[in-house]
Amino acid sequence: MKNKVLKRKTRETLIAWSFMSVWVLGFLIFTMIPIFTSLYYSLSDVVLSGEGIIVTFTGFDNYSQVFSSAEGFNFLRSVSDFAIEILFKVPIITVFAIIIAVLLNQKIKARGFFRAIYFLPVIIASGPVISQLINQGAATIPQIEELGFINLINETFNEGLARPIANIFSELIVILWFSGVQILLFIAALQKIDKATYEAAMIDGAGVWESFWKITIPSLSSMVLVSVVFTIINLATFSENEAIQHIKNNMFALETGFGFSSAIAWLYFIVLAIILAVFFLIFKGFSKDRGRK
Amino acid sequence: MKKINKMKIRHFFLGKSFNDGFIGKLFIYLLLIIIGFVYIYPLLKMFAYSFKDLEDLVNPTVQWIPTKVYLGNYKISFIVLNYGMTLIFSLLVTLVPAVLQTITTSLIGYALAKFKVRGRTIIFAIILLTYLLPVQVYMIPRYVLFNQLGILETAWAIILPALFGQGLSSAIFILIFYQFFRMQPKALDESAEIDGANAFQTFIKIGVPLAGPAYLTAFLFSFVWYWNETYISSLFIGSNLYTLQLKLFNFTSQFNMAQGISEQALNEAIRYSATILIILPILLVYVVMQKWFVEGIDRTGITG
Image (cartoon, rainbow over all chains, first blue to last red; front, side, top):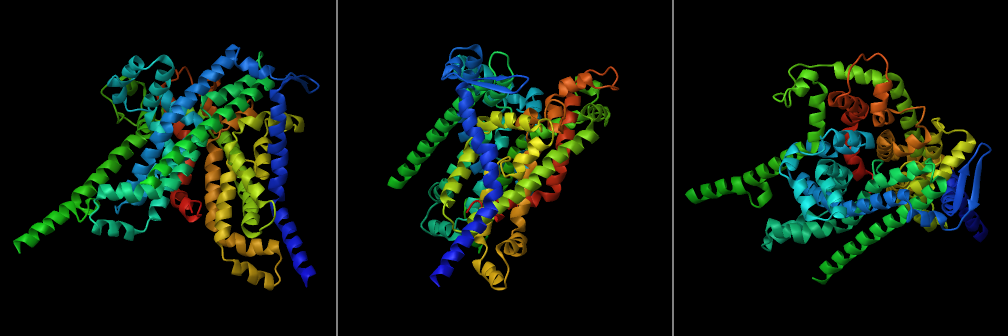
């Protein structure tokens, strides 16, 4: 009897792994080995030649080149721009998504229509489409520029900070375009809130404003984290992001090549991990704060 | 009596609480419409401009509505993009990876949901990590590998990773399938087993048919993301073959190389018409399948 139970378990394990085998094989060949190879490339001089690829180990040369060469400087500048922009974009997108989700969650007619409108950008927002819109000046309402907003920003902030902030204003609409999926996530979370909670609060004399802050926002908190992570990854891998353009362009540049590109790719990942960690800590701080009250 | 009437009027305008009175409702509608207009303003502007001929473009009194419907921009874009052929190739590197990725991720999602095997936690951790790790970190060795296999600049460079579940956002799809298969009642699988079905038959006969919404959602999102992807495709297939998105990306050089469009200079109306042509196929899919996009996230229980 015991033998049979055991056999059943082994059989199940076998079946499970056979279901997973395609993915596991793919992960090993197309992801895991490349990750380690890339780490090795980043510590090497990689030369493509007629016969193949020649890799010579050079230690941290590529990394020190990042901090001492023009290419490295360009990359670092776009990474710092990206980091500053993300600090602004993530709150903008999250707040916007929550507002729209709350509005769409009301008892209104044509809800499906409005939902379709607000999700539409997810369908069409590819790199080339967005860059066409930005370059032709369709990404912002002209009034924003006419009001002299951009000039004001350039005057008040120093150069390193003014550039990314001015960018945000000149691309405001397409930044909001990155909130389509998040709106749906928040709507799903809102629909899970028990209506009775609101009624109970109303009987206790809570107004709309109070219920919003004391019931709605706390129930969204776990979804905020999901949404923030999604937003960061989405922005970080968006093809028009200058930092990742540098990684690709340096692959075939004369002075740099695969080794240098691998090094800046890893640096980019480190920056991304730090950004994620910062937002995670901010989020944790907030939920702790509320817990105390 | 009078007092009741007054109350009624008050309720009509202000409601019992803010959001069900007339004024509250009006406020919500206004907000949704105004924000919605701003939100799709770039699209509306693009659409309006794409029909403008040169005269309308330079005429400052013509803002939104062109004086006549001019299709010349579209004709030019059609030629520059080589629309027919490029569309077919775009569909090849969009539909095929989307289908394959959906199948592979559903297999592993099913296994993770139904079998409690050892190593499951590690697999989950790896899946999460692949989501957080940007593709830039491992794309260079992949490039070298594909070069050695001789599949660079062919559709295989996009299809192969998708087949093995290493495509775009595969991690998200695995999680969608995991959540969905987990919600299926275990009793069904057990009864199938008692009837003598093996694990694979159970999957095909019971798991898959009941997971229709998950399959459709995963496929649609996969389709959209592959359609819009340019970073990897420009690296792996970019220099000779073109998808529609890559043609748009290099529109200026494509325009200068194109034959048979006379001495026309490139202007924003032509660029807009090209952009419209690029988003048109995906927009059609969206119009038809809209419900599945917006409800899919909810139905698959990814939010749960």
